[in-house]
Length: 195
Image 1: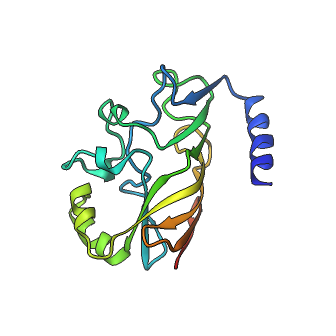
Image 2: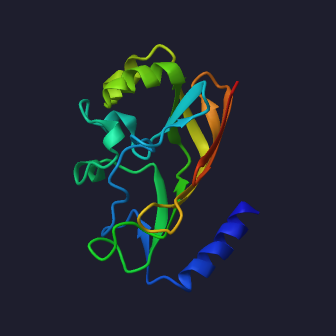
């Protein structure tokens, strides 16, 4: 049902858009970042934080600040764990700075790391968060999402910034996890279930 609604919505947006781009392709290696985390948006429910990696975590440079999000062109040298498309009003940069809609789906094994939110918040207090810091946190639990879907209406492209993320899979221990995020103007709802 979610995919049918998404497809209908995409067709409606395409009627008002100029350009549809898919990734990864030879011309578009995908978003120039490693993970779904940035200074203004960390997936957390008050107790647990989750970081979804679009690219293999082993490819993240040790000193790169993940809160900066973008690392172009270096991040594009790492294989994507996801695929997707963007819908642009006037086309990708330099014509447009952000798409109207971005749809991302996992390729079957999307890395998702879980932590104590208090630990992540503490290491982020200097406004920097590196893969080295994340690996050192005692609460780290690594997982792999067999299903990952993200729908974004990004700030700068869409009139209203909206994020919807759904993921489920298994932790390294074999226990299941679920993740659901719905974020819009003035509201963020996160549900993280670890067993």
